Structures are given as C-alpha cells and as structure tokens.
Length: 330
Length: 298
Image 1 (cartoon, chains in turn blue, cyan):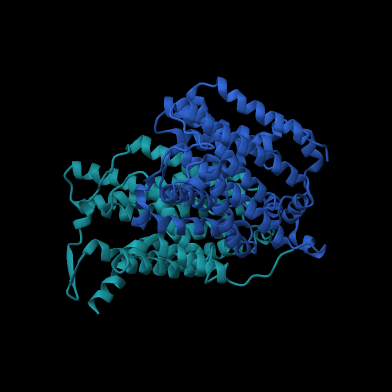
Image 2: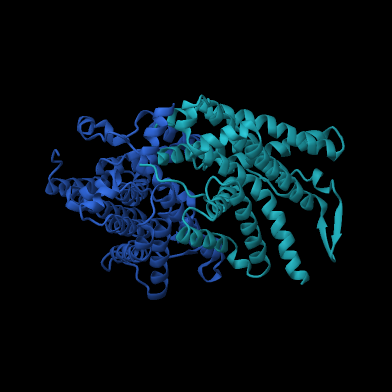
C-alpha cells in the first residue's frame, strides 16, 4: 500500500490548523469546533465500519460522555476542558467495554438495529429521569483550561476550538496508524470474510470488540466537546436521529481516508448553517438530497475524489453476497 | 381486575394501528430486503393527507362519515402512487449496493419527507377530529371507551387476515412468497421480480399511510411524528422477526401491551420498556421470535 503522510507532518498540519483559528471569524470558529467534534465521532464510525459493521447508536456513547462530564462538572466542579474531554472518553470507553463483547457477535442490519435499540433505551431512561432534568436536560458552567478561566467569549471559543481540533487531529493520526497496523488490516479482512479470518487464527469478535471500544472512546470524547460547546445537555444526545447524522458524516467521508472525515464534517456544518440561514425549515431536505447525491455519484465518499487511483487496485471483487445476488437478478 | 382489563384494552388499541404500520415495514423487508427508515414518514404523510381530506369535507359541511371514507380513499390513492414512484424512480438505482447503503438511502428519504411535510402543512399541530365521534362512546365493563378506538381493533385484524390470506392462498401471494424465499430462483422461473418489488414497496407505503390515516383523528399532527413511529415499528418487527407477518402481529401486541402497562403502572418507563424488550429479544433470539429457519447460503 502506498504510504500516506508521515505522522510528524500530520502533527505539523494539526498545529497549523489550530493556529489558523486565530484568524477565523467567531462564527466560523464555533462552527469548526462542532465540525471537529462531529468528525471525532464519525471517525469512530469509520474505524468500526472497516470491520463491516455500521453503528446506528453512537448517540449512546455520545450521551454517556456528555452526561458523565456534565454530572462530574456539576458535582465535583471539574471544569478543565482537557480533563472533561478525558472524562468523556473514559465514560464512553467503559460503556463500550461492557457492550462491545456482547454486540460483536452480530453483523449487518442486526448490528445496526441493536446499537440503535441500546441508544434508545438510554434515551427512554433519560427523558423520564427527573433527577437529570428529564427531556429539558440541564446546564453546566463554562469550561476552563489548566486553571485559566476565559471571560472573553472570543478567547473561550478559541480555547475550545484549539482543544477540540488538537484532540480530533491526534485521534486522526492514531486512526491512520491503526489502519496501517496489524489490527487495522485484520479489520478489513473481517469485513471481507470473517470465517476466513477465524480460520487464520484471529478472533473476528475480538477485532470487532476492539474497534467498537475505540469508536466508543471517540464518541464519548465527542460528547464532552458537544457539551462544552453548548454548555447544556439533554436526552436528544442519545436520540436516533443524532446518531444518524454521525453515520451521515461517515458515509459522506467514505471509509478510505481520515482526512476526508474532517472535510465531510466541515462540509456538513457549512451546508447546515447556510441552509439554516437561507432556507429555514428545509435544511433536512437539503441534507437528504446531499446524502442521496453522494451515495449516487461518489459511492466511496468525498475521500475518493483525491485517492481514486489507489482504490482501483484495492477494489474488492464482490461487495457482499446479497449485493452480488441482487446484481445477478436485476 | 378492572385495572388489568383497562391495560389489556388500551394495549390492544395501541397494538391495532401499530400492527398495520409494522406489517408494511416487515413486508418491504421481506421482499426487498430493505429496512425502510422512511416508513414512519409515510405514516406521517398518511396522517397529514387524512387531516386535509377531513378538513375539506368538513368545510363543505358533509357528515363525518363522508370524511372518514374520503380520508381513506385519498390516502390510499396518493400513498400507493408515491410508493410506486419512489421505488421505480429512486430505490431501484441502489439494488446492486450494500444493504447498509440502502438503509442510508431510506434515511435520506426520511430527511427529505420530514421537510416536505413541514413545507406543505407547516410546523404547527393540526387536527382532524371530526371522524373521531363517528362511532359514539361505548360503555364496556364499567369503563368508557371512544367507539372509534375500539373499531380500530377489528379493522386491523381484518387487514392482517387479508394480507395473510393474500400471501398464502392466492397465486399472486405465492409469487411474492417465492420472491421472498429466493429471488434468483424466482427470476429463472419467469417471475418479474422488478414488478413484485415495485408493488410490494407501494403496498408497504400504503399500509403505513393507512395506519396514519386511521390514527389521524386520534392525534395531533406535528413534526417529529414520523421519527417516533418508526422507532416503535422497528421494535415491533425486530421482536417479531424481520419479514414475518405473524411476528409483526405478536410484536405489535407485545409492544402495545408493554406501552399500555407502563403508562398505567410506571409512566417513567414507557419507551425504555419497549426497547428493553427489543434488546432482550435481539440478545437471545437475534432473528426475532418468528423467524423461520433458513439454510445458510454460501
């Protein structure tokens, strides 16, 4: 496989993007923060999708991270942004460790349905729990960083932007390394044929579980960022349409490139805010048409725009038995 | 005892319309192997069209029974046309792709329809209550019920029976079953699978929107209706087994009773209960309660 960018170069890129935030106007800054946070969770979905499973319930870990951080912030007064991010990641990861081994046995539609069901269980519980504010949720205070508190909103926005971009950037670098590692390659093999992987002496379930936990950690951290950006949390974090949006970003990006996830997430946020501005009440319509267009014309995502030639060589012969079967009949 | 009866009757009323929605979803999955996220949107579409029909009839000061018939007929016509066009015009293009891709296509359709209904009918709740008084009130074991609610139960049973009969006792139904079972074989036997696909999808849409129309007089139509309904019908078809008619019936009754029971006993746990059942079923019988054993195809 062709080698991508060197990790050091990627670190430099992350630093450049972070500093670039200094010159961005305020509205772009908060947009980019949300985009970076969504990119993080979508990256988790991409990691998991390399094993052939799409999770329609990442909202579960997103909400777990968000609520975990919000509760700890309100009870123990932890306001540090980095600490909150770590708490979110730990909350998501722990839940992932519990659910991952149970869910790894499933595949395809059942995997998607089970993740969706679990996130809706959490949603149903959260909506009715009066201690956590029910369907209205509750507020948390402004995050700080290393003991500094930010009273100027512009500075606070930049701090959040910097922390989320750096975190997502490093998650991206980690994912790139993961994709090239033994585990990453085994994941692709699980997607193509999990029985053969088992015959080769690798546990397909273990591969799926590890990827699932990684996706859960990313989702938890992303939930922490969403909380810090909104300073408010409600059960909508766990609702299935929230999870759907993250899958949307992952599909938009395609499963080939890490950079594409960031581009896709930013594109989605731009489409959303512009259609909010010019076509209020129809942004979902725009989103739907956009999604159909991507599936139709860029079946391998935005990433396929710049890594086309590599894919041609790597293209698997038949997608899935069902797809091949449908191809034969139609 | 009376309390128990209330739960059972309430549960059956819930189950009756949920069954019609879930039946459409399960048929579409059985034939086309698509888990249709937009199914709830067709329910909402049916409810909105019904509301418009009822309001138009009421504005001409015709009796509510005319409104009832008008809403069913208009919904049936529009919904089957929409379903047919959608399958032929859109879904057809994606059959050669992964089933997850098809899931996303229906998600896109869901997003689009969500806003289309907002554009046509606005975001404020609308009502169509006229037919609700059509069947009067019924005193039943010391409890009062709105007749309309009770009428839904036999209607839904009749629809369920008709679908079962149509599938198992008619030639067309046998052809559909053949496609469900093995489409490659059906093609080689000369079945026009394309046509079966289009008709099955249109029929699924028709069922969803009929359920919407039937419940329209009971509820207020507002945005968010579709995502609530799809989440319930997913639970039903997964509990019963994707693609199974009997399963949809049992799943609908289970979900209806669970909803009614939790509303009366522990109102905090409504959605939670349903999804807990669904998770438990998926954990122990991932193919659902009623999935027939099939040979593994390599």
